[in-house]
Amino acid sequence: MQVKKKDGETIGSLLYRFSKKVQQSGILKEAKKRRFYKRSPNRNKRKLAAMYREEKAKEVTKDKKMGVVKEKRPFR
Image 1: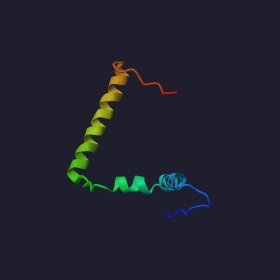
Image 2: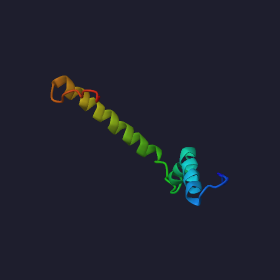
Image 3: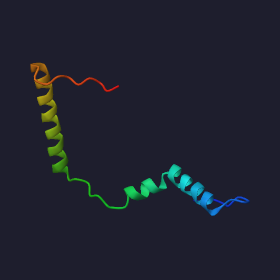
Image 4: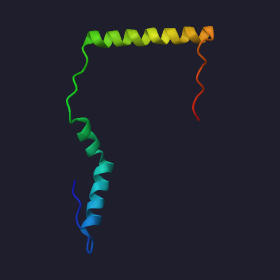
């Protein structure tokens, strides 16, 4: 990322322009995301998580049909 100093521009405003460009480009966000390596979960763990989500979804739909849980209204 390069920013050239304009005529009569202060160091503060130059730094401000530079930081704005860096934020808009998304470089900093990407660097923070890649800072630590995160191992992907193994196949068995993913399968267990999917089974758990499916079971919970079944429970919620069953409870909604029984009238135990009220349906959520969309947030406006």
